[in-house]
Amino acid sequence: MNKTTLIIIIIFVIGGIVFVQFGKKGKASQRALLNKNGILGIGVFEGRVSSNGRTYSISFSYVVEGEKLKNGDTDCPLDSPKAADAFADKKKAKRLDKFLVLYNEVNPKESIIRLDYPVKDSIDFKLYVKEFKQMRKEKAKE
Image (cartoon, rainbow, N blue to C red):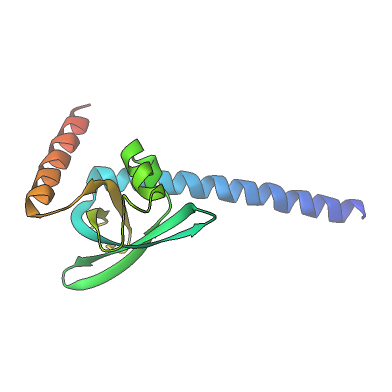
């Protein structure tokens, strides 16, 4: 292998690492932004992608202005220990279970599901809306 080939390989490896790191930071900032400003809705847990008993991603659907949207989420465990448990444990988040979803008002396809906020009925949802409003108000004061 000559020097030019080696340099090109090194550049591609470094570029790949940088790309992955920026992608992770972008996802984290999008998640934080949706938690801070996202519209609250109810999502339906559709399933999970797993291998050897480990969950890598989950899929969910939700309705915005009469349109059913579908999305996936890989970063649910970042929300809380309860969310991490529901992400990993097939008994804690099952197909058709409902959870809180936060989505972007301008682009509703940008969304996250909060597995630490199960929605059993409208009372749960109203309590979560109130909780998020209060939490957002407190953070705005900081």
